Length: 104
Image (cartoon, rainbow, N blue to C red; front, top):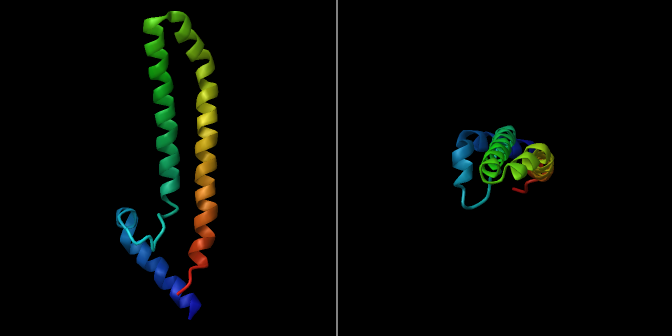
């Protein structure tokens, strides 16, 4: 019975999709793991664009600050990516076992 329950729960979650799970106010389903690569990609692009924007803005105000951001900004982007990756891995580590251990 337990295997049938888990299979039915996974099929219901797959039918709901990402938006259906996002608006599940009873919190009975988790967001699909397939969302994680999308969030990682969007985060990477957002960090890159913000670094370039900060460089251009600082360069227009004081060129020396623009040069500093141009040189040391990738370190900030790298730290941001590490933090984002860490949070996404924590999300996966918590939700994957929880899906299998759900009680009826």
